[in-house]
Length: 135
View 1: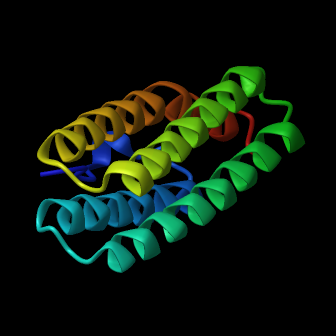
View 2: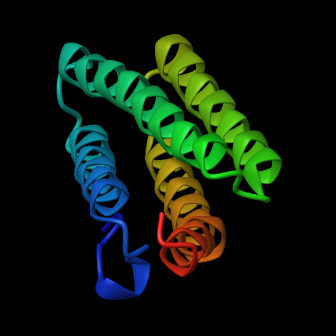
């Protein structure tokens, strides 16, 4: 239904991979709650967690990047900000309109696409950079 973890998404950095797995799990919980028409409070609780965890994850990733002079830090940071803005828009849409089948499909498609592209592109590159430089 949503995001499925597989080894092709591994960055080779356990802390980052574990956070990605947690994010996938929580995004899937959000999608399932929306799809099943769960109570608004349950969906809000999941959104709250996601918003906090995404900030935690991106902050930790960016600290690692700065500490190791990762050359694509600016691109990473820009994409992280874009995702946070998309999550904020999702929250605003949910708060104003509630859940709809179209919202669930859009969230599923956008989040799945964004995370898979981001991980397979930039995060795997970060992992390779760190491993190559013994960081």
